[in-house]
Length: 281
Ligand SMILES: [Zn+2]
Image (cartoon, rainbow, N blue to C red; front, top):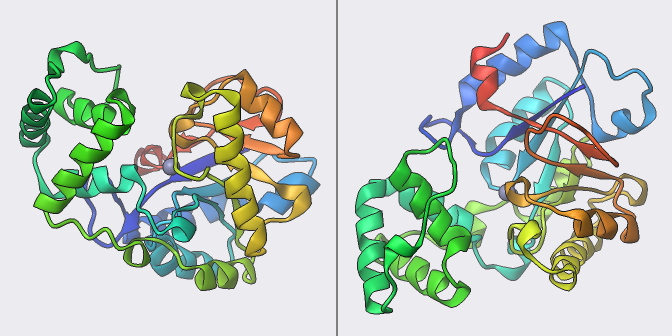
């Protein structure tokens, strides 16, 4: 079985977005060669050869407005990982960062971050960029604002930048509503945990991880979109550790979806980034 991981699917194709038209074409091509199965099919089928699953992270509104109508039309199921921002009404940092990078060049953003850090007496040279497919400045902007800086400073800088670029932080405009999640659930779509605030789980202690995971699970259960025997999780940024696996067992989470890695263990399932689809088939 191959599992594809999608983020944004939009009409306007850019660095972050998978093009909507291309999405539909690729699904049609896949259907000629493969069975596209649901989470439920995956559990009940023994033979998963020639099967494909489609997964979508972050619960952004394009998954309702663009992905869902295409899947419904083609009679195909998808698995959507939903963080708790719809409940908390607080936009995830990752989406704010993407919105900033859509409207501003990463080198200019990096200069602005650098100046702000100066104000806190922090030297940006203390931070080295981790290996990434992005350009150096793009990777450093993302990593600083996602997890490298201390939480308070990170939030302050992110808020300042969002304000100065007039980023729309209204959650209702950016994520699937609860009503629409329920509608999707009634039409053969499946849902899984993507944590409360989308942190790198592998960097948290076990109690913090428990809170992130169980609070999100309780939210999904409270709106009736997860089945007790099909609870799944996608680790934000693919980050997890042994304690995450312990928590999966404690909380009765059956499947963990990670980002591309060769070996599958426990019930961990590797995913292939959707950009690989552009070259394949
Ligand atoms: Zn995510």
